[in-house]
Length: 203
Image (tube, rainbow, N blue to C red; front, top):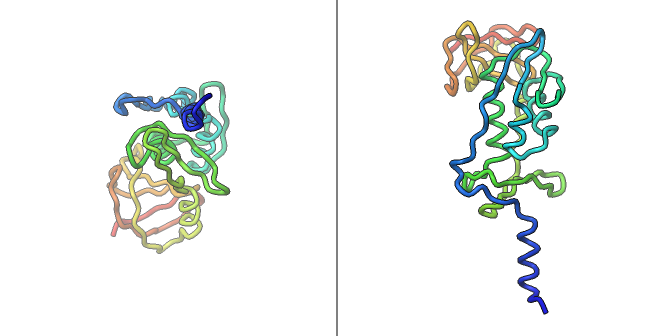
């Protein structure tokens, strides 16, 4: 007769994702991005989703929400309506990895997304920890709705434009900051809002 404890243990192991072992082996492929007409193409989208072990639709929904645009999955590629900087796409893939893949406790990628009522949890099969997934988009949309001329705020530069200005994406808006560098936090004042483009001056 099988020991009830051993039976439960075997069942538990069946539900655990195989761990990757050394977390140093986990490497997200560099985003291959290029402009095609009026669209931006992430050529190795499928490969990235596979390495992250996440559903392509989930990754795509995140990227579309953060970029504030529409698009589609085309085979192994993701196509976004509009022209976006390489560093912006790269940064969003990194954000997705940090929020939806990497365990904040042990730093390993051996995780899965599980639902607890209306809350999405990131559960780690390597160390057993779990945490709610951060809702970056909700915060971004809230801030975006309050963008207006004269508003003062602190922003974190995400990428660099072709002209050398710092670029910040907030919801559907693209904000330009003179002299900003990726990762740098600066205090700015909004001088003009033109559609989805926001111009600023540093304080």
